Image (cartoon, rainbow, N blue to C red; front, side, top):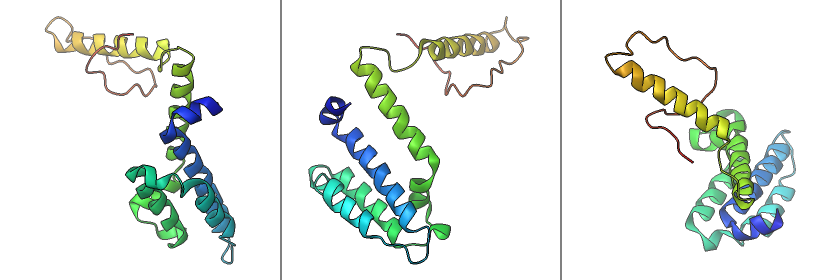
Length: 151
């Protein structure tokens, strides 16, 4: 994993930022929480990377703003940093990067097959002959089906 992080600075920064968010979450969970660990972590691990990339600096500034505002009343851009969806996005990015490093497809084959099936049925429904096809409900979030996935 270390080699992957060495070659993908954006992923490394995203993981470090998640760690900072957790430190901020911990220190702001009590009214008199000590923010020193979060400040030290940001200074040591994230601040040196920020000048290299403008988006890193923006992300760091936004993350540090979590220390300034009450967590109950965060503006939407700050609230999304505390949302578990950010963890899921970074985890998906980690998984894709690891799979790609191992020469595997970024997306599991079953997902591609489900997208292909959904696209095919949608295409058939939109043609005159397939108008009576029942809807496809697999209970999976497969994203847009406007074109088939090919590998």
